[in-house]
View 1 (cartoon, rainbow, N blue to C red):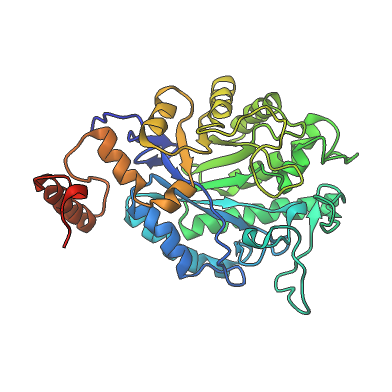
View 2 (cartoon, one colour):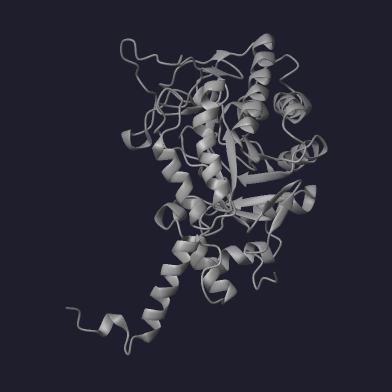
Length: 389
């Protein structure tokens, strides 16, 4: 099928083909129960698949049974998680979308409050230590004043952690995910190792650039040994973090990751400073505006010659299409805009493809939307000016 827009052209990554370039960005839901997914997650992720997105990525999910971000995190540290997650992946696939999952270990930013409670460190009460809230990090330096002091991971700890990520990838495969993303930015554990500001280790995992990227490289290599060759592997990076990690670092890292089996770099920024949010810290040199991180995705794509995904204030169909058409990125990821309008891809497809009907919608939805469209076109005057009874 010939598409009028780049946004709705398919994209093949290894043996995975996305029906369009629209990606649901991982969004923490805080709705898990002892690490298990619930009906909330089926609803939350399923509606985006039914709404026409090409790839739906589940929120950051913990591969290790400690170091959780906050209450309600999802986990993949046990085989028991596979069956309920399979329910989600099966539904996403049934709607023509591709199910993805992000693995995330929060490092020194662990044990935090809900965002709507003001962020900051979570204070545990009594026996509330339901999964072991131990805070670990590349070093023993806290994320910010008032945050808990992390336990610096030892060399044996690092080996165990790498093995834990690989086991989680095996479970993700068994649960039916087709795309696996590793969270390597936003000040979380992997990012702590990458940054010369937060990584002051003096062993083989600190000091030089090659030493600081070693933790991530070992995770990728371990995962690629168990993650099927036909399935895609992404890494999210804070391409610049406002605290010393810069574009040149990210390009060099992307070149290394490409050589060991990473298929796409998800290009974000910030997150290393004292706040828990991901945008760049003041003075980092990027103005917060629509598509503000697209230049980062473009630069990594061009200089490392690797597919990229752009994220950050991508809000309308023409803007998203322009990102793809101009070579800014191969995929566009959206979060809050899709929360506002889960059927955004259907509306965007109608606008850009100038087609009759809603080809990406489920059959029943397409039928009723076609009826709505016919009724609206039959109105003798705009509905806003009619007398409504």
